[in-house]
Image 1 (cartoon, helix red, strand yellow):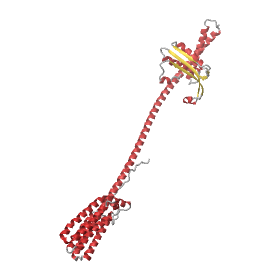
Image 2 (cartoon, rainbow, N blue to C red):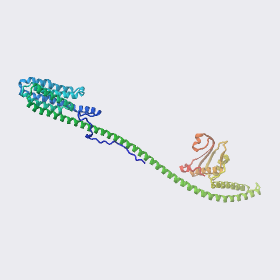
Image 3 (cartoon, one colour):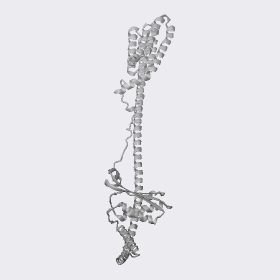
Image 4 (cartoon, rainbow, N blue to C red):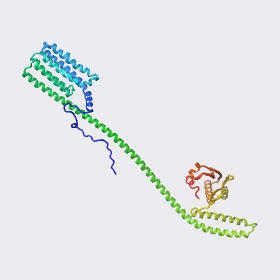
Length: 458
């Protein structure tokens, strides 16, 4: 037999090494990139506003340095800080509260970074040397702020960073003619800071994508587990249903076996009863045969005496009664022989009223304490019965009635012609048609169920 297996959930083995990502622009493939951008935007929005606000405060604080180093140019420098750069950053914060900001999220932050750097470079261009040579350090702060705090992606941050570098090189070389040694020194620090910022930004975005991918796998795994749990619950439910059905079938089988065992015991009891009856029938047949021979002898002598006796003889009626009783005894013997031979009876057309009348009169002579009432329908239909068997049934009914009325009572016998249809005879597997109804009723205590089951037994 083929083994039954339940596959609950697929095996998933995933780690960060399996994350498929473009190493240049750090992007996923397909719909996963769209899901990441939506998640990245939702998780970055609050931090972007805080970082822009921090940038505004930091940019404004350096206005104090302007006032100490070059107070004569404070108007121009503060105009750049407070009229151009800070309002630009503040505008991006305001713009972030609009739904359209999601579409321009990265360009807006990259422009903010570029504007902040361009503002410092413009100050370097208008501040007289040698003070302006040291202002490049402010660009390093812009790189740190832009690459690490603004949540701008690596590609956009790199573009903004190199635009700032290119603008600085243009101003330093072509506008303020920075001395070579200072330019080389500044570039080493300046470009190194830009490269370090790129590496930091690359790492930040990479690990952000890695965390997102792991969360994505975790969610997928949870969905698989949920699906597996649902499948498991369904399997458990099916198995429980199967087990319930099996238990039900088992209980039915046990009940059927118990009924079969009871039926077997009943059949064994009936078989034993039949065997006993068969043995009794054999014995009764032998006794009846011998008894019948005795009766035939008595009948023969009685008949011979009647042939030689006139009707006026005082004992003539007694002899006739002896002959009638002998005939009656012979009839009973014949019935006993029929029972002993397995029920071979003589069925003839009889008058039910006559049979009931004779049997009740005979019974009434032995039970004087019982009053017998008869109500026979005139013109009763004839019936096909074995008279001896019917008389035995009637005798059983009379005896049962007398036993139910030990102190005396009333016995009612009625006959009726009835016509039965299909619905009337269906429970008894008889044919519809004309029947004769015999009703026997008494004023006794009644019969129990066991007695009613054997009421028609001979």
